[in-house]
Length: 115
Length: 113
Image (tube, rainbow over all chains, first blue to last red; front, side, top):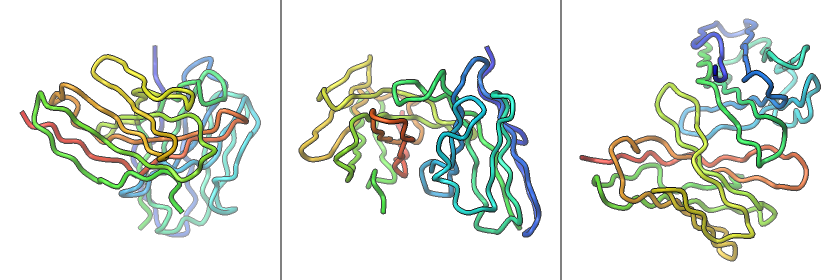
């Protein structure tokens, strides 16, 4: 079966622009997570969803970042007024349901470069 | 403040020998620990985990050891194979509540044939 897919794989944008990053989780997985991995760092939690609702958005760095999952499947991470410091690989993961015992399956990530 | 620390950014091991990757954590509330493996241009994949009620968990060539008093865990790979060359991330979590995983910075393992 298909794994987690993320589009685009690479995104180059200019400072101040708006970007959307898409995540297609594994079918049937109710939990969906967004992480950001900066150069030389491990993945850092941003937000996770259980179904359609954001269960925990405490990792979002500021109000320029927003994520939605309107139908409980595909999720979009939206970044307004991008800054050079937003450059990173944005990883999406899904699991059958929430909780640490449920293995998170990661997508390949979207590499965002803000010029 | 890094709650999960992997102090060795890289490790080089000969094929057939043991690889030992180390991880320290500061939050004594963490009670579930995981190791993920990541190849270039791919997402991390789950490797092995351990609950704080255990001190060892083994899966084939991979064994994770947990020392709660020292807040330290290690991943042993034996024998190491060239295909094990990847970045390994240690992660920690709380089983109570639905808290997200906290990852270390990773250790790049190179297994030399």
